[in-house]
Length: 201
Image (cartoon, rainbow, N blue to C red; front, side, top):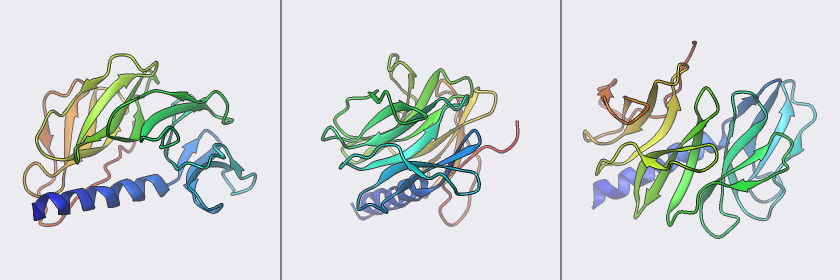
């Protein structure tokens, strides 16, 4: 029980840090901010000017993830009473709810071609990595493991997804095929490793 509680706490910290981190939207940067009393999605120019609140809701909006072409932003919100994945255009209009799950949905990540979204779905305190088409169809559990998995990041060619998991006792970095197969452990450190992201093409 203590290990389970520690795993959930560590994953929550990773989620929080990911939510606060900036994400590039073409020539602009998207981020989460609670400057107005609750967490909202903001965009700004690369020099910090022109900061705009895109969500402007009394709910909590986190984890902005920009589509590869910069026209859409996926994010996580509890505006309908449960944590789900939403998408909106880059100017904040056209908000559409993509998931309606009993649990916690967060950390959306676009595939390089913009057709799919990977995300973390935590039900009964057990996070898994799921993927769906950008039109919300084709929901699939990729990890299907009794451990905790989260923090998915697509490879530039769309063929692989890096993620973090505590399946071997502590948090390590893994990579799997985009269909969930071929899981390979990349790190084996005495501490915890989390938050993978791909660099280069």
